[in-house]
Amino acid sequence: MERRKERNWLLNPIAFSIGTLSVHWYGIIIGCGAMLGLWLAIREGRRFNLPADFFMDLVLIGLPSALVGARLYYVAFEWRSYKNTPLEIVAIWHGGIAIYGALIGAIIAAVIYTKRKGYSFWRIVDICAPGLITGQMIGRWGNFMNQEAHGGPVTESFLRNTLHLPNWLVNQMHIQGVYYHPTFLYESLWSFTGLILLIIVRRVPGLRSGELFMGYLSWYSLGRFFVEGVRTDSLAFTGPNWLAVTIKTLWTPMHFFGWGALEAGKNIRVSQLLALAVVAAAVLLIAYRRMRLTVPNYTDPITEKIPSAMPLGSPKT
Image 1 (cartoon, one colour):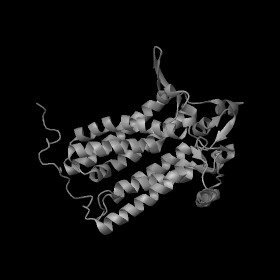
Image 2 (cartoon, one colour; image 1 turned 30 degrees about the vertical axis):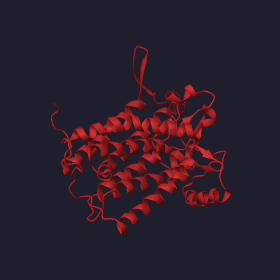
Image 3 (cartoon, helix red, strand yellow; image 1 turned 90 degrees about the vertical axis):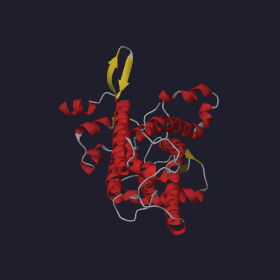
Image 4 (spheres, helix red, strand yellow; image 1 turned 120 degrees about the vertical axis):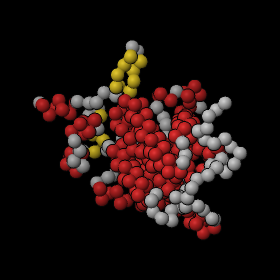
């Protein structure tokens, strides 16, 4: 009897309410992830004499851009659901965002911002890379609170005895009578490992500018490729059979962990294909820049490209 009560106990996605306004844990968790990521960027930026205001402004520009990009990316792949109800495109509170769209939006904003400030895009995003993966690591727990973005069905034994998860986590993955893969946890732990690696690698002599950021993209994408195979909410499309077979073959090692790939209705998951493309592009770009270009090291001083630009953090008149 007590065991049954324990299973039915769930975390409330609403942190608190003020009148008719409800504040959700999802927003609080996302905000905490963004603030911790900002703190990491500011701290590393001090080594290069970059003021805190520089990164604060970047976040103020990057977050809305990421949100818009995440929504447009999702809508683009689900256009059939929105073409007859265009007002739903802006109804982001109804759900429907994509992490790769957020990255695209944030990168575009960073390119514009760093160019206007007169700094190298690659030098700045290298500093931000640990903060970005930290935001993703923490932000996934917002999905946990909402019981969303999970994987396919699993047994209770898989969660308790194979993964050895605590009761409160297992209970939250019990949704409408079915237990599900805690994909939020897989991604969070993968991101945490990536954060440690980025912090270590950025002190390695000979690391070139841009390589830490591309390492972040590659690490996250590699993990996302495998986790995406068990997600229940994947964006997908019908593509050539040879490509679908290739992706399934590359995903095969996950069977050793007791994972079973889910069919997404169409044969190619967008995030899996994009993940492979990002990893390949990052590796090729690193090789090209090392062989063909003169690229500064990560530890080299960062200076403005535009001498006449107002120094960052100087008083405004």
